Length: 304
Image (cartoon, rainbow, N blue to C red; front, top):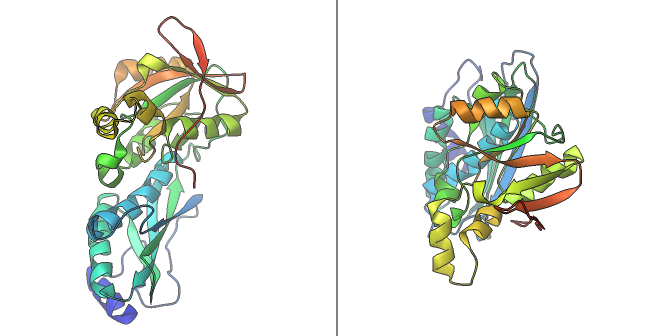
């Protein structure tokens, strides 16, 4: 099956300026400029990150690539190349692999990303798919979690909550947005919200040795968060889901106050930018209500 898949991929991919050799060797040869690169990998499993056959292979393949692209966005890195590893159920392995790649390849082309190689195997268990991407940082350097300072504004892209109603598969990685911002504004720290707004913000605070105050009324809540809360009927609110659902794949950014003011006034991104709070010197997370009263916020979201 593996060789059959390689032949099929050779027809779809072929050599190019970033990968001068076609598929078929034991490792990929990358033509690189010598600038700094970043590498990210994510592993997705049937029954955890998706459910076959309810979720079509094309959507699963797209998601597997998109979550890695979101990691590159969090680092403000330009996608270069990737490799894909598949552990396929024996029954229908080739057709499943085709479907996965049919979901990945259009997205890869959209971001000028080359699928440079990978590995496949078949077994008696469920599908597991691992994607590794290499990205190139800009002259501004990689955007890290550890650069936030007390007084920095907290800016986010997009809206939050209710990702289980489809956004977890159909989201657009904020790669272009991150690259545009970092080449024009002094971004100090960043992360993508793969596991939840409050949980991922807490990770920035931990890495930066600070805390954060969130303006409760400013948090941009997706329509899907309201729909999901109503569908569950368990007493949870749309705000609860905005803070903790995860798989929003938006960006949390630490930005100096003056630059944040300019960005909010300018609103240069189609997905929107919202100022939701500020970093503070005191460790911890807090929610501020309309009266300025501060309530401790327990970070919550998806724990791996």
